[in-house]
Amino acid sequence: MIRDVLRMGDPRLWQKSLPVTNFKDPALKELLADMRDTMAHLDGAGLAAPQIGVLLRVVIFGVKANPRYPGVEDVPDTVLINPELKALSDEIEEGWEGCLSVPGMRGLVPRFHKLHYKGRDEKGLPFERTVEGFHARVVQHECDHLDGVLYPMRIRDFTRFGFNEELFPNSDLPPED
Image 1 (cartoon, rainbow, N blue to C red):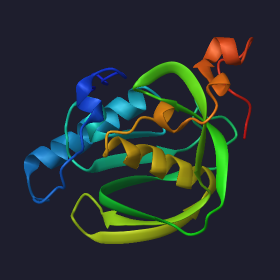
Image 2 (cartoon, one colour; image 1 turned 180 degrees about the vertical axis):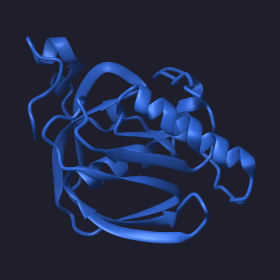
Image 3 (cartoon, rainbow, N blue to C red; image 1 turned 90 degrees about the vertical axis):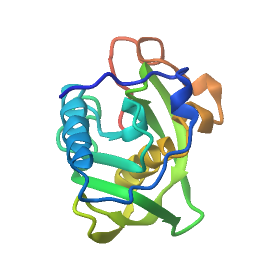
Image 4 (cartoon, rainbow, N blue to C red; image 1 turned 60 degrees about the vertical axis):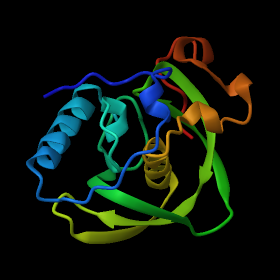
């Protein structure tokens, strides 16, 4: 089922989410199905449970030829529950980000270039990955939602934040990073 996505300003987006403790709960399976439907409907690169009003530490992400993110590398479809992230270097890169909770806008956001993340999949099985570039950016963006952080809160230069049509006249999207 496609759910409404909360928009910036909704106080639920500022709250810290709780860990999932019961991986056999049918409500978790339903939540994941709704998140997948909602993300696909909106052409999102990822979605965090708090964005649809569920304060659990659950994110999904994945990108394959997404019209909202042209020219970026594929990111595998992933369910990441109770994530832990660790930057693998101090290297920071700025890249354009958008968000389903901040529709129609983009901002230049600093993120760690390379990181290691681990967590559980939808069955509760542990897994981990080392990633970089756009994949690392997506993971950091989605996991920020679990701690009540939206990407505009990370922007350093607000001249690089605004509505898509103002920042990128004659185009819906920013140029590739």
